[in-house]
Amino acid sequence: MIAPRRMLAGWLEKRGPVGWLLCVGLVAVAGWLLGVARIAPLLLLVAIGMAACHEAYAQGIPGSAERYQRELTRVVQQEWGMNGRVAVHGAQIHQESAWRPGVNSPIGAQGLSQFMPGTSAWIAELYPDLGPAAPYSPGWAMRAQARYNKFHWNRLSGTADQCERWAMTLSAYNGGLGWVNRDRRLAAAAGDDAARWFGHVERYTNRAGWAKRENRGYVRRILLTLTPRYVRAGWAGGNPC
Image (cartoon, rainbow, N blue to C red):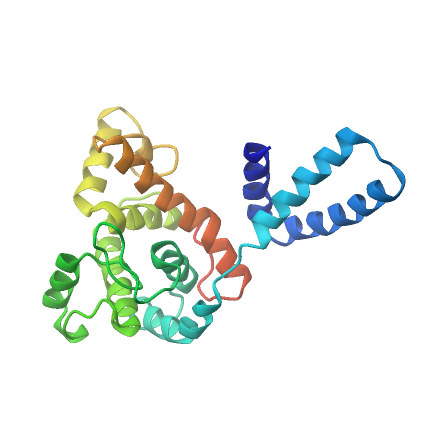
């Protein structure tokens, strides 16, 4: 039952308000079935549907995110302009640390935006206006994240649209700009479209299997699952995909 539930949950999330209305209707159908029509196959289908609705809509935004929403909005709009993708940056922090500023990853990444110590030091050196590296400071972490995303964005031209460019930007944040450029060259060499990430560049890499799965899942979850959630909650900037 788990695979159909997860597939349906993903489909419902992408439908936005329509998916929510479908879930409301499903609750009404469930009540009717339980009251007057105890038909086992139908009850099983409704159970799967209700579990999918819970997965799609009950797993919301951490309460701690609201504490930083205003500051992140200011930071992103300062770095990217008034139409900056605040929702994408919020979704990225959700994926990185679940909005926990003091968290450490098993491999040593630190803070809200999960920078490795070497990356934090490099960003602080490249952008002295940010001040000394302070990955456990939410303010510094959000400013560095927005600046680091912009660094990659500016070096990933020639994409088909903003969705594809954001996908490559996030892949670079997670695994390195050099890997994204190599993956694009592999796609072009195979006769595929190096301007498109989804279904094209994402299929090509010489990374280890675990690294490929982690990197591709990172991009897809942020842009296709979490960003729509933040947009629905009213975070600014819209969804590029």
